[in-house]
Length: 172
Image (spheres, rainbow, N blue to C red):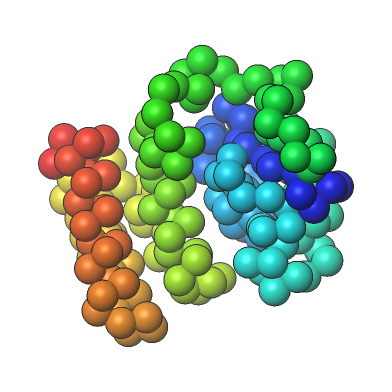
């Protein structure tokens, strides 16, 4: 796969992130979470330390219909033939999450960016939370882990983002 290609989650990929509906193995699911429609294949591989298996996992996610090539690597900005569904392609900057699944993906990506694979220890509770109280408890566990590993400032950034998520998507 072209390392400068930009990948984006499909509806199937967003469904997997939200509900684990397709039963992806945890390593592939972690890589799927990192796909944000902005980062290139090379960027994603680099976040995992350049491990060759990451590129193969991205290929498997494309073949499985979880992600699609949003932009080809030659600097083209034309969307791929399989454009995202209208519910995903909404107005606004590409980094501003629009749906609950996209916003949750941004939160879990933040954790993965700052905690690495250890983020998997706490992201499941965030994803399963259905009430504001469940989400707040899970988010505080995540913030505690961030504080221990990356410091109070990163933990506060996460708390602020988690609070905004809860207010927008959980009514709390």
